[in-house]
Length: 410
Image 1: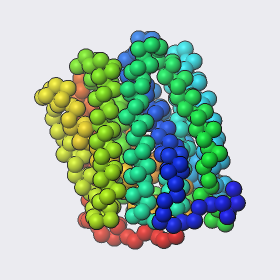
Image 2: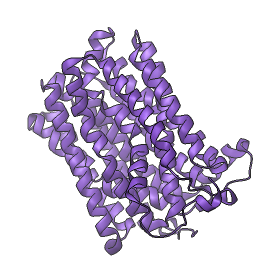
Image 3: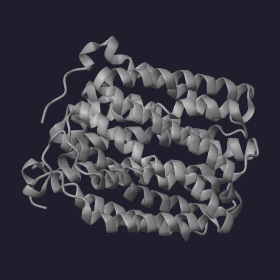
Image 4: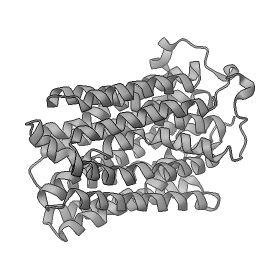
């Protein structure tokens, strides 16, 4: 598109169709992970792998997802947003087909990395596109709206995966994911370019790591990225741990597991809706800290219940609900606040924030495999520590007011 085709940066609605497309781009990480969660116990039997190796299908996906973001963002700052999205969707389709055809766990792990390298283009560039269009407070609102819309994917994912397992194997789930990628490719032609040529970076791509070093040394970005990273670490410990905690330990059926998982997404949707309404009154910074307090308390409750067995399934499900729901306060507000300081490096900043968020998931998902003992305790321990870490970092701007700073404009 030409620069005249790009959207003007105004605080206005750019159409429901565009919001739907951006939310679909942001949902690729969720559908690639959540849809096959009910199949994890089946993978143990079908591929003759232990639980730890099967859980690595989540952490290896996150490795590719984190590493890929470090490329797509800077590339999009130089070429525009649409071309990297196109390449990413093509990789996602190839990786999904490879997963469906995998003969053993090693092949599945390899293709999960390819799938992730493609999947990460959508979320990182959707965030950058929102930053192209809106300033800090409004971008936080728009990200909440997008997260609210994209919540359909993790809400429906486990339910759909459970239904597919009733009539087919886990391979069919990856076939459906490949079809989702093809649908994204077909819909991409309706997505306008948000970064006109005159606003694109002129520096060579080889300077990317110098840019990252400059960004990561900025305490304004680091504070928000670390807080979100702790939160995501807890979320992925829950995602990797609950199939075995619910299905294997408490003998919950795959269909019931899908319902339990979906309840958390409903809470996430409600909190994102509240976030869009409360930002004009309370501000994104205050809501961000409120969310951090909630996840810290919920994480501690989950840690205690997982250790003692108090409440059984409910003792896990209720704290998990209150840990997941404040995503509406934490993710949108921390990402918008971090990107607001770097309007000319929105792609690179979005990549770095995303890599730190999902990179923490790599660590916690791997830790879950290392610490697995057949009980929910390792999951509860990791989620609890991550909740406390999120709160500690979220309070830093209050302890050191200079970290809060003032976002750049334009």
